[in-house]
Amino acid sequence: MILTVDGAQLTALLLASVRVVAWLAVVPPFSTRGVPAMAKVVLAIGLSMSMAPTLATQDLPSTTPGLLLATASQALVGVAMGYVTMLLFSAVGAAGALIDLFGGFALASAWDPLGMNMNTVFGRFHQMLATVLLLVSGGHLLVIGGLLSTFRFLPLTGMPDVSSWDAVIVTAFSMFFTIAVQMALPMIAVLFVADLALALLTKVAPQLNALNVMFPAKVGLTLLLLGLSFPMLPVAVERLVGLANEAMATMAGAG
Image (tube, rainbow, N blue to C red; front, side):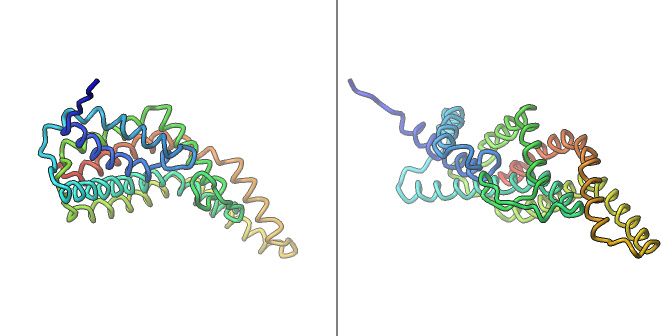
């Protein structure tokens, strides 16, 4: 039995898989240790198969140097798009970290074995809630669809226009801080007023130990009013999905 393989489709499949697997290696929740490396590779190949017949009609490299250059270019594009997407989705965790900072929980930071970094209590909690909302609402499918749509704007042999990437990264950083502060602002405002009230209380009654009163009060207030940021999570996740797709399209040269 003789098996024949279409060389154009195989080359398109492999090059597309490089971009997709580089993106999956950076973007949460796919980048965590909870998703095995083999699962990422299989997912990348499966997603690339849907694009291979269309990509096979493009001009593909026919020499070894051209193939190596195209592979490096696809890896660069995948990592860059994944980094911007990861930066945007990290805004939810940053909002929880701000609440930890003002609520007195920042000292309880611990090593996150899945994310392979140090994370605070509510920072990790908000990140997990955002991940659940992303998966339940199908937002991860929209983001993956946005990644696959970049193949229409940036072919496999095309070099990206990196001159526009600095504006995309700066905008992603600004949206990261803006969304994080907007989500944590109600809790920050409440805790700031509590700090002022407790400071005035220690002035009125100097015999009270400020640390013995302020720290338990702020912790209890944070636990009591933590739900103030929860109604913003669905809107924030929806907005982040749209921003991630727009960022990837811009980096691919779509307008």
